[in-house]
Image (cartoon, rainbow, N blue to C red; front, side):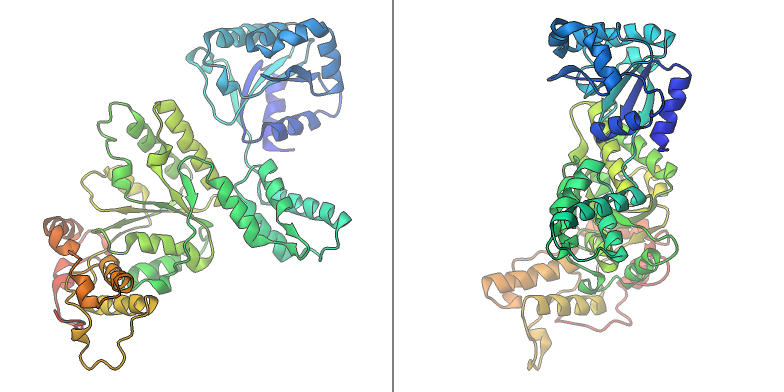
Length: 503
């Protein structure tokens, strides 16, 4: 018995009259509940704005027949339908589709409340179905709230096998291996039953189940959730120069015990949560509280990357998933914000539900930050795995970065007697600026030295901010480049580095 069905039956046993179920797939929810009452089933009915009142079961059709066709015709109006619902026989269960669209209307809220005592007296139940939970104040204390979880791994595996068997009836397909089923589950985890079923069916080809196609359909469905997108870049740690300590730590983390099943990337978190201490709308404060509570309750893993722009923070965060073969989900908090606090928080909770399902309860949150001044201390505590400081790359790291981007953009230094004549002066350059120089040289068909004339490194344009960041990180955060805590004196010392380019 599913958890939802168990809790629903428990509520029915004590005559709970009003129940709200937050579900991503109301049709699947209704089917689960109807099939769960095999012995002496009650009358099941449903209502939506197009069909009005309709029977779901044979007993439900019989109950509906008592009203006559004239009454049913006016039942497209939610208030009229709820007035008729007061006359349903005992033990009836009425499902109200998309209830969040109507409960804010005073007349609908009152009509629902009017059913409370009537339904409790003879074990009738009104079930409010909705993808989001939005109850008016007058109903909050009277409605019992349940939640339909997204399908788990076992349920999706059964769905994969069932769809494949159906396709084999009319097509000559290869046998479905256990390994393919596991890959298909990974590619559909986080989807509700109906879209998962559709994605699987559309991904079956004459050669078998097309896993890459299944992943792409999953990405498209995830991106329908406000603020969520799946990173499609192919970067791995091998494409990033320097920051060796960060790469070593993260490799061990994602390959260790209870490894994460998904990376959740929050870029510039201090800007996304800006105003959490004084936002008059209340949206930022609500976001902060919801996110912190969720991460604590779920014991989510978290890493915080601090440093100046272009120091490879985002590049490392995006490369984690590709390095070990797990999805990286971009978590855009600004994209979840709406004009109303309740709507914004609902978007955030929906996004967190999807993250929970995709990661199967093991998500690694990675947030980048360019400044600590606007970041509340409690946020830093939630990112408990590590806080790393990404400084400007030293000479040795810059050499590695130049090698990567020279190769990427087809610039060869072979045969050059003096590399400093080819590589422009680059003291204080970030990896992003080295990449920009190589890309400009490629696009403008010019030398690297000429391309460098269009670049003002952040070490010059924001020198004061970088010095301030280094002072904040001194002895407090782990270095992304070398083992141990960050030491700005070591970072600024030329000792032990090999010059590359004319400094």
